[in-house]
Length: 227
Picture 1 (cartoon, rainbow, N blue to C red):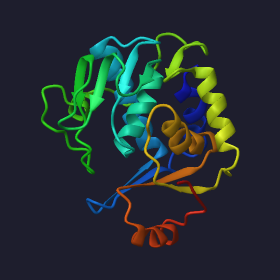
Picture 2: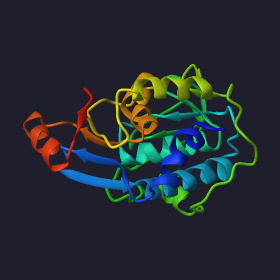
Picture 3: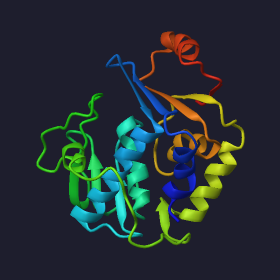
Picture 4: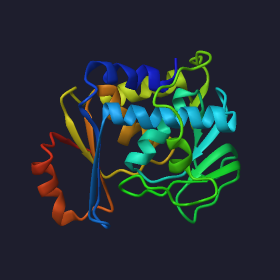
């Protein structure tokens, strides 16, 4: 099974309405919260888009060149769901998703707007607008073997094991505050997958204003904090 099926699907089945990620951007003054169910819809649309429009198969490299963001969460989970190998900067890829103005060495380069409300960027290949047209459910055509490359140099089995080891310090009811960037692979593991593996909920703050973090912890009922 894929990383998404192993680490995320059980959370979705257990409590689909629970928040998965609450994302703040202090520079923009924005907040957006996605439940497990809403994140699953984005992930399914992404997986269908990658597979049906761009022929991504298990093991094919997909470069996720975005900052930590709720859009990035859906993209990562969708990429793994269809078996893709998530790679970072400087790696060749079949499909790359970049922010406005970004570039990548890939057969297909799509733009993600990072708009808080999910509006597209109006690009010729637009991740949000293009994936939005796809279905809210995804069924893999074939299982993803555990030895399939999944994140950087790590296989599916290795990603799951590393995420569970990092997540062992959290409890399932934790609200985890993080300011870590999701570089591949360590940032994605520590700042995102560890919280999923524990069954917790992530509060991520981009461009953090140190003067606001105490209020974030109180208002969002944070129980643990990453860097």
